Length: 265
View 1 (cartoon, rainbow, N blue to C red):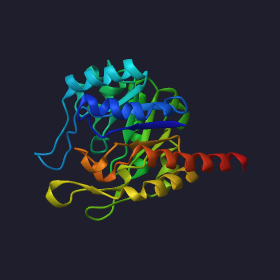
View 2: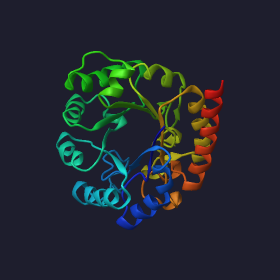
View 3: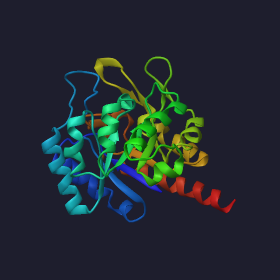
View 4: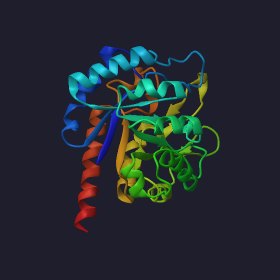
């Protein structure tokens, strides 16, 4: 099972190394990728913390790889960032708001890295096949299906769908639909985000993360994405929907139970 975990954004080298140390046991159990963003370019407010920037951020992520041996995942928002990021990370993540940006998808596809495309909150899951196809065609494959996407390193990630204003819901059917086109990751923490909100900051309901995760496990996915922080209430980005490592540990135990039960039946 694929497991993507780490903080929303790089706050400091000390913060990153502290969280990376917490997550060490998972690298021995799962196909593990440490996640952190060097820049959060889509924050609600201009005043919100975005990160240390690409040069300092990639430098810190490179040190994480050297010290812990982790595979790495980070977001890219613009085409010029792709080549730089690909020199350090193993997975280039296309943010949900940019999931249809052709130039960004094609540029990421030109690398030899896995491309993880987050489904836009506004997207019909059926239409995500076209984003997958942009990457596949760039890599010399013209047929969209699960096996081709897996072979050529393309993932899709579910992170909820806009439901009115300031709320997201997860339609579990989307996991089944998108899995026809590519391996699917369930982003449990962003799925409980409440976009917008008072003071130009998004809210979240982290207490629902375990429940949605277990539902996704029952439906069937290829992996899980958990943003985690040792003190989410003090995090500089996405605190209300991030979870602590102990909650992630308990949730993963429940997911394993569901997966075992499915195999036995």
